[in-house]
Length: 184
Ligand code: S3P
Image 1 (cartoon, rainbow, N blue to C red):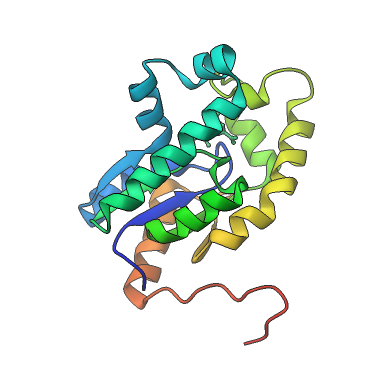
Image 2: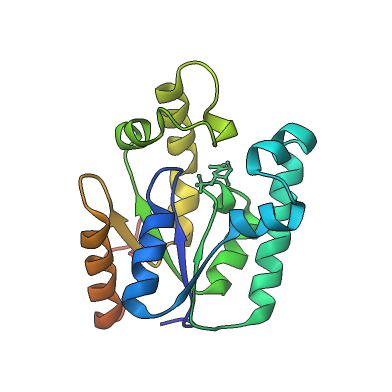
């Protein structure tokens, strides 16, 4: 297995924050949320950053944070990433360097149910949120897949069950998912 850090990736509403907290108790590891690191540094919420400086600025901040975190080296940390972080290929390289990457795979319907009353995601604001979620998720699927050492389906599961599943896989020693086109 790669370094000891764990990295949680997945779409908005896939449960990265709650699973990160659950894992941190279970594995006695500190959890850090890269969105929170950016918010703290900028002194603004994600919504405010998008509104004041735009998405490109936010994406630059994401890459900058990842670069810094990879410099710290391997500690016993859990990093929970923003849902769009793996879209940039440069970020994917950094994410893979950061530690063992766990993709919390979620369906559009689950995301919609979880986030329909949530106003904190600028990319889901506006009309037809389910269509937006479906389109964005589809366009990002390959980016998540390209990073993942472990894929966990989260639909219909409680945080506790997801944490159990991840812990079990870690104990077994994660085998990287088979790349597309390869056979076992
Ligand atoms: C984003 C996801 C958000 C946050 C920002 C952009 C995205 O993080 O980084 O709103 O592009 O999917 P969460 O996945 O924690 O909601």
